[in-house]
Image (cartoon, rainbow, N blue to C red; front, side):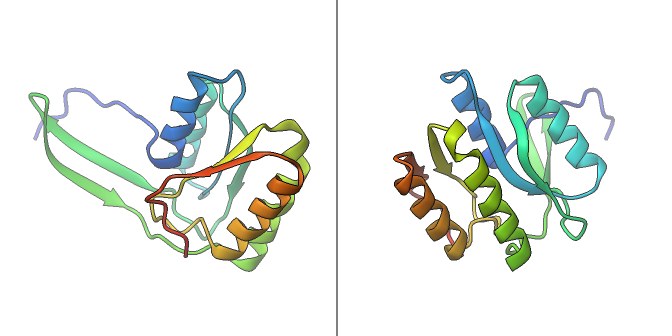
Length: 148
């Protein structure tokens, strides 16, 4: 197979953030990436889209999720997934919750979106929802969102 062109697009929750950015002057995304080149690529794309990356967490044991689509004549032939969905460690959950606590005065709402990749743990969702409600913030979730 000869590669003629490559393009990069964020998927999952990062794509949701890009879509929300079309309607909001400020969007912040939280998630976990590894310490790899794919994380750098994702950060560049999101930064170019004007998305705040201050809440992205880096974990050396995590592999940044990558999906490669092979397309011929506008038809997807195959998709190769490089991912190992894994739940957040207690330490990383705490770090994320504390980051949200610090950022809460600056944000208008929270969207839970995970696509079943393991980021959303019940403790995390419960604590973030409680913090957001106490602060009078809007909380929404994708109805198909899986919480582990």
